[in-house]
Structure formats: C-alpha cells, structure tokens
Image (cartoon, rainbow over all chains, first blue to last red; front, top):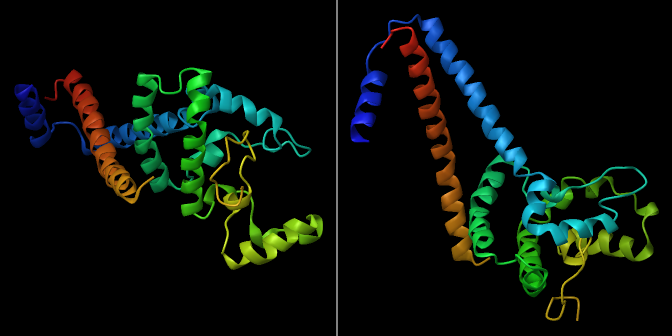
Amino acid sequence: MKQLIKSFWGKLSSPSKAAAGVLLGLGFAGGILFWGAFNAGMEATNSEAFCSSCHAPIVAEIRETIHYSNRSGVRAICSDCHVPHGWTDKIIRKVQASKELVAYALGTISTTEKFLARRGYLANREWQRMKKNDSQECRNCHDFDFMDFSEQGRRSVVQHSTALAAGEKTCVDCHKGVAHRLPDMSGVEGWQ
Amino acid sequence: MSTMENVFWHILGYTAMPVIFLVGFVAVAAVSLWILSLGADK
C-alpha cells in the first residue's frame, strides 16, 4: 500500500511529456465526470424508490394526501420535504443519514410493528428539525408573501396573519401529519 | 436532536465536503495517470 502511494505521488510530482492541452483536457473531462457521478448519487438517494427501501409504510401513506394527488398535478416526493435543498445543508443531512444505514443494518424498523413503535420518535425528530429551520422545506414551495388570504378559511387567515406573520410560529407547529398519518400525539405541544 | 448531536453532525458534514473534493481529485488523477501511461508518458 505504502509503495503504491509512493509510486502515485512520484508520478504526480514529476513532469509529464504530454501536452498541456491533453493534461488540462483530462482534468476538465475527469472533473465533469466525477461531479456528474457524484450528483447522480445524490439524486439517486433522493428518489422515492430509495426512501421506500426502508420507509415503505410511510411512503405509501402520502398517496392518501394532497401532497401526492391534487387538482393541479403538482406533487412532493420524500426528499422535497425531508432533505434540505441548499447544497451545504444537503451534504450535512446526507452525512447524518449514514447513521440511518446502521439502523437499516440493525433492522431497527424492519417490521411494521417495529416501525409503529418508533413512529412517534421519528416524527418528533423531524418536527424538531423543521421547527429549527423555520419549516424551510415547506417554504421551498409555499411562500407566505404570495398567500392569498381571500382563498383561505377563516381560521387559517387568523393564524397565518398573526402567529405566522409575526414569526412566533412556523408551518410545522400546526401542519403536522400533512403527508403521513399522525403518531400517538400525547405530549405534543398544542395537541393535548 | 440534542445540541451536542447537532454540533457533531455539522462537524462531520463540513469535514465531508473537502474530503469529497479530495477523493474526486485523487480519482481523476489516478484515471488520468492511467490514460497517460497508455501513451508511454510515465
């Protein structure tokens, strides 16, 4: 191994007989290919099929909600709400998800019973994450500035024009279970 | 997630970024050197 690294370094640190254009071209093409492969990997792990491989019961539930089927045909997939869209935050979330690979190997939610027993914990963790980032994943599609209050119900107008507008509350404080069934809500603030 | 856990994952996440770039460079360099070696450059 040491010899291999030494040989690799030797080649990197000695001049090449190839033309500068060839070297630059290799670097340029290699960079594009690497970045393309990296992004393909990121996209693949953002797909609904990938999420379903562990979270099938939750993924199936979205089909009963407005985030799956609605009059306009716009829909959200798992990663739209559960993976930050900004590059830096996305990488951090992906690295954090490596912990979930351990849970997969241990079979933490490998059966429906195990999943249901853990559902409250998983939901609560996600609500906390969204509360901390001011429901950023909701706001990627739902923009407060463009809300038409005349199209909303009376209770919604009251809440949106006061608590949400003032920043006292964020989307997920009220909108829990918008894409999945709710777990046991005992002990959850505002749901007693 | 506790603050401690949050800090831990942020440190790991930020560390991962230069590692990704470095691994990319090493991979591209290795393939490029192999291609150059086909032309008896090295």
